[in-house]
Amino acid sequence: MIKNENSDREAKVLAKHIYMSVFKARRVIDQIRGRSYEETLMILELMPYWASYPIFKLVYSAASNASNNMGLNKADLFISKAEVNRGTIVKKLKPRARGRSYLIKKTTCHIKISLKSKI
Image (cartoon, rainbow, N blue to C red; front, side):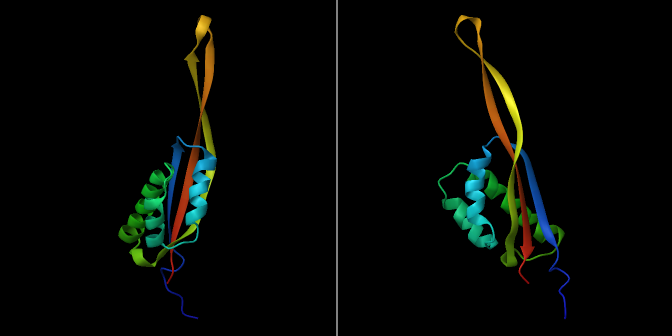
């Protein structure tokens, strides 16, 4: 069996501490998992969710890394892995009436995307 030297190489990208709920990001990630690079960009541009913008930037960056650093063709790439994990919770205090304070919890997430070549 002849194996192409680029077949097992994959471009990985990781974004940490994005101010977004894990569930909102997973809703977008589930739509693009396993799709081709060009189809993914079209889907992310047309999705009405705010979560699609950082994911769009990640996919675009991973494809640029694959073409520049590894010499892979962007037209042959597809999303092999895409996962969203929970990050740290940023806690802030908001002043309230009568000198009390109210705790505000801002959730963050880590997004990990891997692109592989079809050929």
